[in-house]
Length: 457
Image (cartoon, rainbow, N blue to C red; front, top):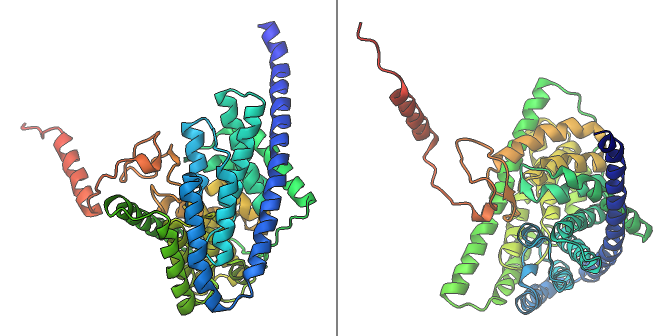
């Protein structure tokens, strides 16, 4: 017992030092690769930004075809927003990543976004981070458990480098793995990887610019209620996005299996639909929509229904097989929704946009803790309580759904909506739910049947 008390802190220190070194090494490598991917992406976006509208009539279907061919013949895991494929690899294959996925995902995403597809830049960054970490595990001959850990470090490092938020990136890389769970053992190595990736990316010239919310919101009961309403609306908006993406994806699968449609044709169809929307709505909801995001966060009006159009653009882009991330679209949807609701809720436009941005992210990714940390890293700690008040209702309102269907279920959000624990969201049986008034009546009937009979005396 005495020897154990002596050796225990030394062994714990050894574990601490080991994962600080391994996590930092992994994060540094991820930071380098993600930085040059992002520089290439932004260069391609700048190259196409001045194109006339008619040019996108060729670029969107053409980019869709290139994306479809790359994914179908090169790496099917590069389809969609991609992070769910990494989550699936962590849970099912101990983090083993096909090295071909990262470059194909990067090229397919650049082709999608530069042509005007509505997607984000973080999906490829997470896949690049996971692939680099998996290669490090091969080089160091890690066990399956060690490989799993280092790949999680790579995911967090990718998020940190792409958003410029090392703390939130580290937490997000862990929190997206399971709904309602946080792998505490991974906090230290993931933080080490995320911080190193952030520092390397910054040192290589990568910058992150967000408009800052300008006003402090003094707490009151009225403010609490208004933020809860904003959180509920944010959760429902994220839910709508997931349902539209799932519907398009299932329709695509049905046509491919029953009608034998050639899979690369679906991204072409997405490009055609997006161009028609460009003609009707304009180009603002296409691509990364960073201008739209910064306009909302700066306190300028963006239109009452821009959040809806962004949902439609993103659902078509990713639901029909084009490539890119999903967190940046969640940012834009949340910021534009928050801006649209700020007037009716009596909130400053900039603060409403910032809070909506983090609430929709918390709901869509089932990652409220990471969303709160990210909000504080981007906008400052003064809005931390406001992010919390809005993020939790949003997380509840999306229910048992996520933009990452491969997330494992660790939490039952409501006893009225049962779900199997320990399986992926995409594998949970979809039991029909009776209307709430029927459920209440059944509950009361069951309680009455269990009540002991009245005394006859």
